Image 1 (cartoon, rainbow, N blue to C red):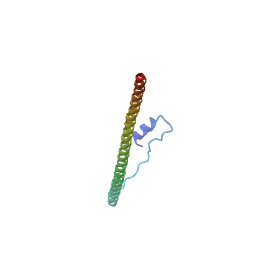
Image 2: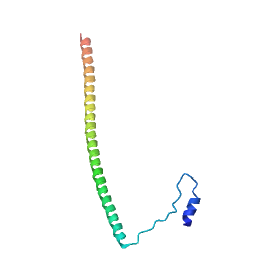
Image 3: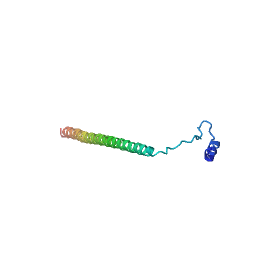
Image 4: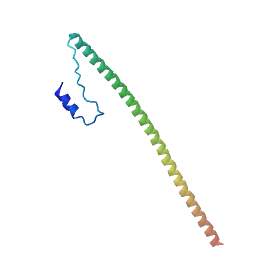
Length: 112
């Protein structure tokens, strides 16, 4: 048995944790297995590239959607700010009109 495996297994304070395996795998030695390994590695790389492209395109679409939503939100908030500004202007005009009306009534009463 490997002394490192024994040492790590003895130091394991948590009995629920699985100790390191003492089983050793045999590596293939034939020349044909090298090409199989290369083929598997190539397939793995291709799968990674495909999944990376999918992730990238999905992320770019999501970014576009978020930017569009932000743009719509900005337009809506601009519209809201414009509406509030107009309402405040209208309120000021109404208040001023009321004040002018009171002044006119007072002047009429004093002139009579």
